[in-house]
Image (cartoon, rainbow, N blue to C red; front, side, top):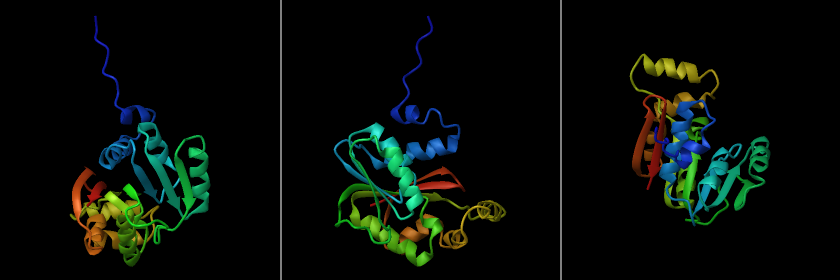
Length: 202
């Protein structure tokens, strides 16, 4: 008799219909580094359509908060999380978060840093770290330093990203921005070297 296959993890089950394996791996890594969610408070800083909020709600009992400045994204996030308990989505700037220091156990900042000027990157990082009690988890592009890969990847990403991406790469990506903001990287996970990386900030 053939044994039954092992039950998928919560991450695998929630992303089972997603065909993009790179996307799946990014999501799984973020969930893992955010840590246990039960009884915690988590902020998705620049929550977009609310994907991570929706996934996190199914993984545990955390109190979830999402902020975004773009109203079209915010409306979609509210629709996507309307039926979920303990999820609050609001309109706020990630440059000046309306929360006291150390409000959240964990803060997520996903694919935001490369899309802003260098000075603003530092402000956003310090703000996100200010409201995080335990950890700040950052996901962004990890542009390679070697040519010709660096030039090719920047050219490809430049087809749909803003001009700020080039300066983000010159700064050394998220790692360089984190260092310039005066913060310390606790852990780094390069999901696809030359494409994406997750940084956990102390």
